[in-house]
Image 1: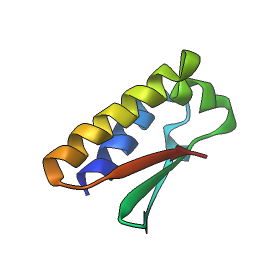
Image 2: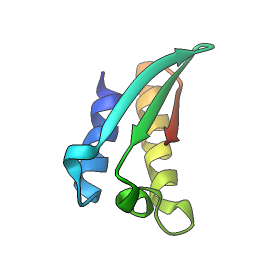
Image 3: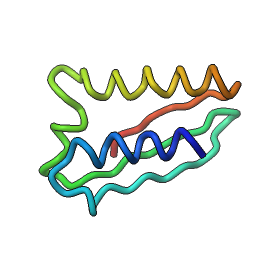
Image 4: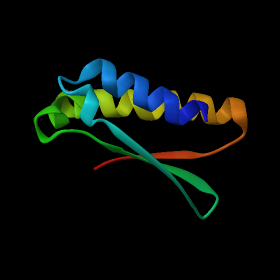
Length: 77
């Protein structure tokens, strides 16, 4: 799945502990939910100032979803 790999790649590029990045995909009411789990110390790097990094990840998922005809939701846990 391209969206899962995209989120995992971006997250591992941002954090200090890439070995603790975990991406879990599930289906919920016609939407693909992507859960991103990172180390507690890296949470701020994935969310970004005022949520800018998380917002950018969600925008990338919208582009991938539009291309593939799917709908994605990103949850940072």
